[in-house]
Image 1: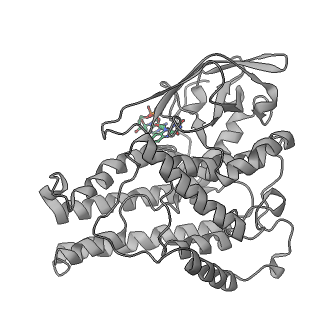
Image 2 (image 1 turned 90 degrees about the vertical axis):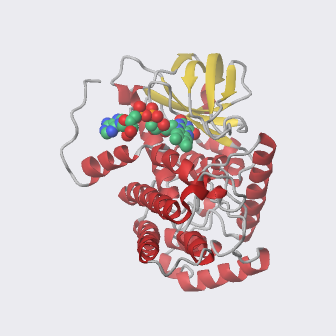
Length: 408
Ligand SMILES: Cc1cc2nc3c(=O)[nH]c(=O)nc-3n(C[C@H](O)[C@H](O)[C@H](O)COP(=O)(O)OP(=O)(O)OC[C@H]3O[C@@H](n4cnc5c(N)ncnc54)[C@H](O)[C@@H]3O)c2cc1C
């Protein structure tokens, strides 16, 4: 069952909608009054994933939520959401135009938990939650005032997510949950989790899954942060021991979990087209200029590759926005994730060439670039690995023969 479909214009005749040019001009005017223009800075933050203590994480999220709230109040967030769900009823191209203009301004960094909450959980609740659950949660999830975490991956179920084993057993109007999740980004600061469980072990694996929203403060839920090699703790393991939740927290129908999670992952991959995580073409160009090396042929080649890659990412995002009519993004989203990952690799190659040993020696000037280099591999894995994106593109969109699969 699908509740509240995602029509971009909320029923409005698009010929009556504001043109992209007029919208862009209005957005630029508003941004100019609300945020300073982005300036080149001596200290370059090119980290892919935040590597800070929990206090700084909370401050980061608070700043992102405050900025998002200003945008919501002014009609510059949820731009392509239907009006009845708090959106503006405009098109994906309007949304994309705002994002392009916003990049020129100094705005708060977007914490992963904020992106998961407002960009993945919110649209999934909008599309699949029952009206009562939407009433309870949708507005606060969309505004970011209720932080959420995706509780999908398990120690033995990552790429093959449908094999997961966290069990949900129905007892009248309640569900008993037992099992474990892992790599749960932002779990230590989230209040709610979007949980995928196995509700029917006898059904074929993709059909025996059910999704829930779960408050992490529920008795029997234990969040254990994982220490990463970077020193940070942005991931956690989450354990469920005899956790009881009401059926009213179920999202979608019993057994419909796979379809719902595929939609959520579509929003995740679609959203990555507009990420600004990691170093950019402009930052590498500024670095090469500062080092006085823009005349070197190899450096010029790196910069040309980066410029082309930057345009490809942007054009793919524009195509995705223009093509998108309803529901989660399709092949453009898988392409977008792959393209952004390739661009991050190009940045790694360029800064490795430019900085050499300075990349690994804490010289107080260029060392920050190591955060791009060490963070990029995680980007190729999160939200489905590159290999999985290619499988999806090949099998679902290009019609290539599927890979041999063991019986489920
Ligand atoms: C930064 C980051 C954030 C994350 N955040 C979350 C989160 O918030 N919530 C959550 O639930 N999970 C999260 N994850 C987990 C992520 O979704 C999984 O790590 C990912 O899906 C891969 O699963 P795996 O680690 O078990 O690797 P595996 O599935 O074991 O894969 C190992 C290798 O085999 C390859 N492979 C596997 N199957 C195939 C196939 N069929 N064809 C070709 N190659 C294949 C993979 O591409 C990979 O290279 C996060 C991961 C990262 C890195």
